[in-house]
Structure formats: C-alpha cells, structure tokens
Amino acid sequence: MGISQQPPKPFPIKKGLPCQLKWTHSTLYLTEGASASCHRVQFDPIEMEGNDFNFHNLPAKILARQQMLEGKWPGRGCEHCKHIEDSGGTSDRMIHLNLEGTTAPPELDTDLTAVSVTPRQLEVYWGNTCNLKCIYCAAHFSSSIDAEEKRFGLFDQNGVRIGDNFKLYDKIDEVTEKLFGWFENNIQDLHKLMILGGEPFLQKETFRMIEFLEQRTLPDLTLVFFSNLTVEHERFKTWMLRLQKLVEQKRLDKINVIGSIDCWGPQAEYIRNGLKLELFKKNFDWMVYNTNFTNNINSAFSLLSAQTMPELAEQINQWSKTKQVYWSMMKCNQKEMPGRPYMYPGIFGDKVLSLGLRKAVDIFDPMVAGYKDSVKEQYKIYMNGIAMEMEKAEPNITRQKQLKIYLEELDRRRGTDYKKLFPLVAEWLDKV
Image 1 (cartoon, rainbow, N blue to C red):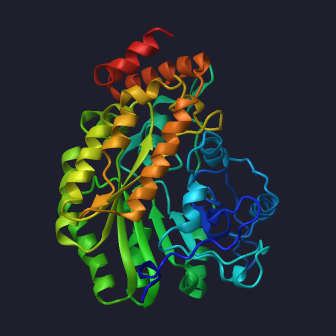
Image 2 (cartoon, rainbow, N blue to C red):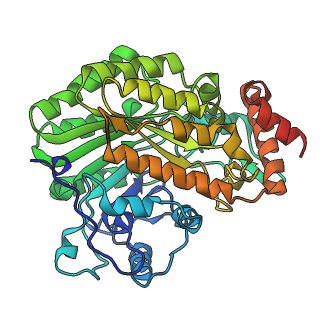
Image 3 (tube, rainbow, N blue to C red):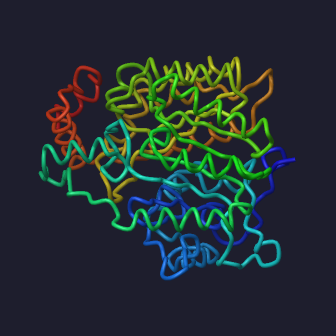
C-alpha cells in the first residue's frame, strides 16, 4: 500500500513552530542553481563542490529549523504563513502538520531535534521554457517573459522595475546532471516529486524524468505536475497516457496533474497572458473523464483574479460531480516582501473581499456524497485564512500607484487593456 493510501501521520515535532515543509520539503530552481524550503521563501545557492550535491541541508535551512524549534519565525518569506496566523487564520505550516501523503524525515523517528534530515518531498523547476507570460511571473520562470524583456528593455519607474537582463544559471547543465545522479541514489526515499516549469510538458527534462521512472518501481512515490495546460491536445493526451501506464504497472503510487489557473473567463487569459482557456478546459476535461489521476486547480490570488474566482469555484464544483477536483491557492506576492510588493492583494485593504474572494471561498464545496472531503476541507480552511488576513490588511497608497504603473506598462508591451476586463480595480486605481 503506497504512502498516499495510508492514514496521515502527524508531523512528530510539537515544540516551537513545527513546520513539515521546513524539514520534509525542498524546492529546486535549476535556472538559478538554488534551493528553498518551499516556493514561498527566499532561496540559497546549491552546494555542489566535487561529488557533493547538497540542496536540502544548506546552512540557511538548518538555521531556520533551529529557529523554529526555539519558537522563532525565520523570516525570509515565512511571513506568508506568519501573516495568516497573526490574523487568526490557518496557514500552510499548520495544514501540512497533518496532511495525507506526507511523511516526515526518518531521522525524526529517533531524534525530534534533528535538523540535518532526509527530504521526502522535492519540487523541481527544470528551466524557464514556457509559453505564457503571467503578470506576477518573471524571466527566470518564463522564456516568453525573458524574450519580452529583451525586446522592450529595462523599465524602472517609481519602484516598478521590469527586466534585469536575466541570465540562465551558467551551470544549469551540470546541476541537472547532478540532480539526476542524486535521483539514482536517493529517489527511493522520496514520497512526492513535483515537477514545475516554465511549462513542464514543453521541457525535455520531463521526458527524461518519465523515461527514468519507466525503468524503476517506486510504490511510495507520488508524481505531481503543475501545468498551464495550454499544450496542444493530442500532444497532451500522449503525455497523459504514458503517465497513466506508470500507475497501471504499479511503478508509482499515484499521479497528480495540477492545472494552474487563477480565475475564469477572459480575465484568466489576461492574468496568464498566452493562456487559451478553451484548450485548458479541453485538456482538464479529458483528464477528469479518462484518467485515474488526482486533479487539482492551483491559483495565485491577486486583486485581478478575485473578480472571477467565483466562476472558477463553480467550475471546480462541476468537475467534482464526476471526480474530486481539489483547489489550492496562494497570494501572488507577500506583504512588503521582495518581488512585486504592489501585487500583494491587500493593498486596498479589505475591499478585495468584495471583488469576489469571499464569494469564491463560500461557493467552493468540500462535500462529497454528503460527507466532507478532508483534503478539500483543509484547503477551504486555508482560503478562509487568506480572507481573514485580507480583512485586516491596511491600504497602501504607494503600492496602489505602483500597481497602476505596472499594469499600464504591461498593457503597452502586450497590447492589452486591464481597464476593460477589471473595471472596478481600474476605478480604484484611477482615484489614486
């Protein structure tokens, strides 16, 4: 019986600020030669001198684990959870303490103070090959954004900066080989491998990974893909049928394909510039009706996506009448954190709730055949935590002005017009 079929095992550390992700999970950005304890926090260079390949027990990660054992927030992005918890909500940290398919490092079986541990979950960004230009993304995740920035050059105005002459990590080929070498010796210890992009179904490393898995039997491993699903339908089906064989042959525990989309309608196509909603739905429908995969929707919550998030929630409920479709969400930027702080959805205070967030959370249905699905219920609790954070958010005029500058510059580059699709946000920004 694979890990996903076993009852959830609570994270064993109870003292301080225990965090399953800090101990169990690593995110690898091969485009940067860097690693983080999750994709919400700042990252640090991978160590790979000689035969060494260290991404999970880097000094900064060990220090963060020590701080959390002492009840201290490490900062450097952990504010994502801290702000939610300070508002009385339930954060990622709290949810992951008791989540299906997640098992703590084996070192904690005998030492609850261990801070140098074996990863159980690995999240990999192969490279930046991508066919979309999401408004909250950057060149190191999207080759399309990289090309756009090279075409238009640097934009730097009132704290809004677009384009920093991104350069792919010069040792990306070496680090990729190191990672596959690590897989050869350690993949049996993983319980979850998550593949992201760019767009993974356009990347050669995904093909290599599937070939690698077709030669092994890993009954405890769940393979997860995050995809924008804007991939030609027949090509997409070929990928899915090949993945399905891995489960049918019992080479893996299960497959999870997560569609990345933030809301519904033309608003979704604006936010994820290049997205073809009709194709997204065709591909997602095919998975729902033709595979035994677990399927999720993953959304980045912003001021713009809030408007038609209720329509997305309704679509998820509709899919779930055939097969459970889960919904996860994160803020597209944290409050006053590096990146684009003007993209933080609380820059207008609690007004964002009226745009559609509250309605979307209320619509999202965790019930199945008269019973609550425990995972969907946890996701709903987490979304309510984000809403609680928004209730306490304070308006920030500087960030509002910066958002207006940013959207107007994107429209100039892309020939789009946010004011037509997001009239209420446009009205708010016109008053700044």
